[in-house]
Image 1 (tube, rainbow, N blue to C red):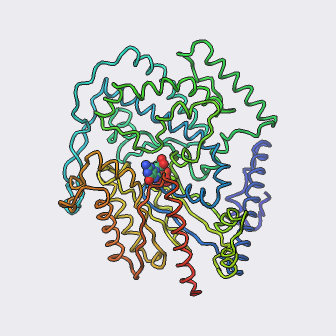
Image 2: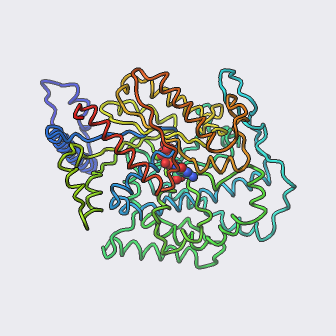
Image 3: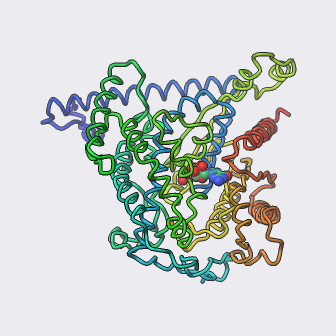
Length: 539
Ligand SMILES: Nc1nc2c(ncn2[C@@H]2O[C@H](COP(=O)(O)OP(=O)(O)OP(=O)(O)O)[C@@H](O)[C@H]2O)c(=O)[nH]1
Ligand SMILES: [Mg+2]
C-alpha cells in the first residue's frame, strides 16, 4: 500500500506494511487482505439482506442462551437444531466423533490421575462446613474429599499392566487438542492459583478433570472441520488416509502393548485416533469396570458417570473403526464454548418439510394469517464460565428472549472457577443480575431448571438438600419438592428485581432427553412468537 507522504495520515502510517517487506511476507499479507475484503463484503451482504427482511416485516427473532458453564446451553441449542435444522445437525454429526473420542480419553486420563494420587499422593483436603460469609444460605459439604470406605486392596498385576498400556493416551490427548486448534487447555481454576502451584500439585480443585475448549475466533465448527473426514474419492482424502494408515501400522505393529503415538502427524488425526482407541478399548473397559478402580473412584467421590462427556460405558462402541455418532452421542458430547456462536434456523420451513407428504390445511391457513410464519430465528450460544461472561452484554440489544439455563442438581457443588462459591448460588446471582438489567427490561425471560435427571439421581443417592441450603428446612427431600423450592427462589428474584412487570416462564428440563426437550422447545417457540407479536402490537 502506497503512503501519501503529504497527508501523512496517522492511520495509514499505522497500518502500512514495513518498507523492507520480503516477497513471501508480502504474498501472505495480500492473501490476508483479500480474505478480509471477502469477509467484509459477506458482512455487507448479510446486513443488506437483514435490512430488506426488516422492511418486509421479517425481522428475525433473536434468542440468547445464558447460564453458568456446564448448565446445558450448547446442549439445548443441539436440541433446537435437531428439531428445526436436522440436516445441519446430521451434517455436523460425523465431526463430533473426534470430540467424543476426546471426551473418552479425558475420562481415562482422569482415572489414571486419580489412581496415581491414590498410590502416591494423599488428596488435598478442601475447606468445607458452613460458609464463612454469614449472609449466604448455602453450605458446603463435609470437610473431607475422601469417603469412608473399607481399605482398598493393592493393585493386581493385571491392573498395573492395563494402566501401563493406557499411558500413551496422554500424548494422544495433547495431539488431538493441538489438532483441534486449542490455544491451551483450561484447567478451570481460580486465577489466584499460579501455574507453579499447579505444577507442584497444589491444584485447589484436584478432583476436577481438565477442560478443553476451542477459541471462539476459530469457532468450534471451523475446528471440527479440520478433523472432519475428507470427501471420499478426493485426491487429498486418498493421500492422507494411505499415509495415515502407514503411520499407524508402523507405530503399532511391533508389539500391541507398547506402541508409540509420537509418530502421529496431523494429516488425518481422526483415523489415527480411531486406530489407537480401537486397540485400547478393551483395556479402557477393563480398567473402568475393575472393582479396585471403582473402589478408588468411590472413595474419592468421583462420579464420572454424572459428569459431562461421559462415554466410558460405551468405550467399545465409540472406539470401533466404523463408529458413527448417534444423535444421543452428539447431545451428550461436551465441548466447552468460548465467545459466541450463532445458529440460524427457519422453524416453519422445518415443519413444512415434515408435513410435505400430506400438507395440512390447518398449516396452510396458519401461514397465510401468521406474520411470524417463515421468520428466521437466530440463537446465540455463549460461554458460561466467569472469564467468558464479559462478552454477554453486547448481545443484549435487539434480543427478543433469553433462555436462562440453571442446573438444578448442583446445590451441593462448588463453582469450578472459584471453589468458595456454590454453583446454585452462582446461578441465582446471575439470574438476579439478568432480571434487574435495565437494557433487558422488555426481554422475555425463560428459565430452564436443567439436569433434573441428575437431581433425581442425587436425591436417590441420599444427598440431603437441607445439608447444603439453610433455608430448605425440614421439607421432604424428594426431587419434586426440591425442584418446586428452587423454582420459587428464581421466581421471587424475578418479581422482586425486574424493573418492569414481566411474566415468569419456567420449565424443568433434562436437556439430554431429546424427546422431552423437543416438546419443551416447541412450547417455548410458541411462547416467544406470541410475545413477539404482542410486542409488535399485532395482536
Ligand atoms: N445428565 C445430563 N447432562 C446434561 C444435561 N444438560 C447438559 N448435560 C451435559 O452437560 C455437559 C455440559 O453441557 P453444555 O451444553 O456443554 O454446557 P454449556 O452451558 O454450553 O457450558 P459452556 O459452554 O461451558 O458455557 C454436556 O456433556 C451435556 O451433555 C442434562 O439435563 N442432564
Ligand atoms: Mg456451551
